[in-house]
Length: 268
Image (tube, rainbow, N blue to C red; front, side, top):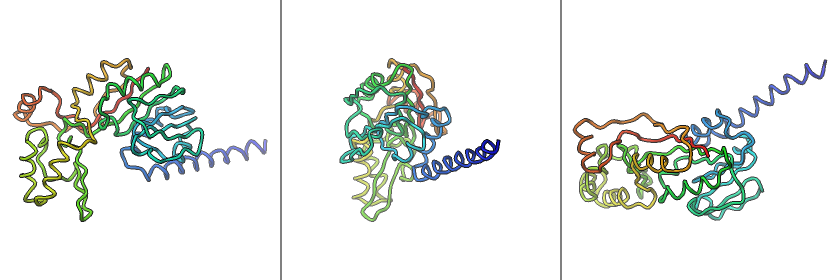
């Protein structure tokens, strides 16, 4: 009786400390990754799971605290020159379009990486082959190209100032309405000639994003072999005016220009 009574509060303390450790570790991550991890954790997707992370390298200590069985990271850039030090946590500096493994995974986890994958339809077909039957794919992605800040700009000036899709001085949907030269001219009074030219060039030519519209993502997912459990807006949508909507539809032959980011949960 004494051991049982004594053991109960010890268990409670251990659980509390474990939760505090995870929360402390998550605080070091960008908020979008924290949110995605917490959503998956709340659904029990990590528990004793074999996880394949596409487009990222979540820290080993975090994966341990999440209670996974194993965690593999596939990213052609972030995993470059990283050496796996644990048989249950491995890096692969490869593209998900061609990555192969003898393992079959319970969960594929992708945070803000799908908008960077060119040939996403091929990538999702490969992910399907890497999942166990009943395995799930959870992805959070955005800002997507068709949204008001879908140019996904990320540019650091020589003085260290970061110009991003969140603070660049451009009208909403400018990347869908104007040419590269027109945007450079808009930016000129704010950023000067050199930075304006570089920013406008990045918006249209950076290799880092696939420039897929919302309708493209929907078509790719609808035509995959995966069952859709969730396909919804993640951030608050931003809607163009009625006249602007008509202009965008005419120019791009698409319908949805309001969705900023998408939350996917798919199942094999």
